[in-house]
Image (spheres, rainbow over the protein chains, first blue to last red):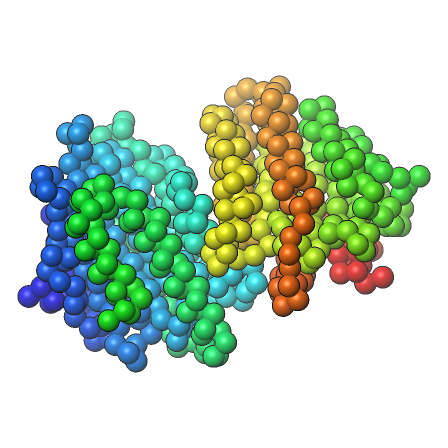
Length: 274
Length: 274
């Protein structure tokens, strides 16, 4: 049963946050499931915790069939009790395409470090240099009107821009990326849940829908040279995302041994080492 | 005398705005002047206005010597009286490097459409895909600590993020770009001048200094293939900047005939058509 679909249940986050993640994953599984292999991660990589038991991680990765343009779909959550009594909760869903297509990837990460503060990264990261390929920018970012979603969210008073401390991550995202901090101190946790339910939820669903309709399920012509270039660029992004996001944090959160085991498994799937 | 240095006097903007622009241009001329040819634009392209005389433009472009890594330095101002009685003032200074180096360009544009509202774009736009070249990101953006300047400005309450309506322009800038709206409604024009004098001025000077020290005056090894690639990418950025920034606005502001004359001259310098 550990390889069946949608085993991520997001037990630690608020109901609207959990509903959103479950809906997004279910949408992906419904649309792309027939192209995906079961998750082959060992059980102690699908779910793991630190020695004191106050930090818990859960991971689900499904690679695409050889003939599919999907490289893999990556879902995860992390829960860590903080010394303050509050908790850090991170949930993520991302999708990487293979070099048989040059269409953008999908990236969503929700980081909640207090009941009233949430960071959202939601984007279709481009797989080409947009400066050199204005027609690509037109197709995937202008014609899809993705920026109107960013603008909608921007109108909410609690929504502020978020700047990742990693300049590399800032370079990876598109010019329509939603990278925001939502500070609901005044309205409290109820207000944050309201913003998730009525604003984040519909916007994330539209962005995922755009990715499914315009990226994952559209055939693109990719020549041999271009394919090698994509492979190279994709590989670098995957290495860098492990190097920036996971390597500095996992040993601290889970201890060296667990971190090595989990990161090793992620690398095997990311770089098809099996 | 129309080809002498620094003929741009910025007569219509506030004293701190004018002082900043004059200082920046004088710094560039002092450091790079010996590598620059005189401005060869015809007098009616160096200064031009519309038929009713309420819109005025001034342009100064100096190309680099053949042996210099400077492609050209571009300075300009535009003043247009608005039907509201207020005025639109745009001042700009940018510097493009040649394909003999891959170091970033310099870009500064200040757009003031009312006495209390100012848009600032200040950046060293990269000349490579940063995702594919993390070592380039490290050298020009991380090691130079450019982001600390953006963060400083971000702390001022009147400073809000600015999103260009052109996704292409958003793609051209670096992850440390300063792209902000400064809304000084409450404090009035005096407060805006204060922000220019005490915040924009020192920050713009540090960014220009970084460009001069770390980009314009540093020798970089560029191979033949890489040089052709840079030439291609640079050319596209120049075309796009004319297409997005000038072509939609100049005919409206100056009339078709003047717009054609000025844009034609800019294209000749941008693409070395003489």
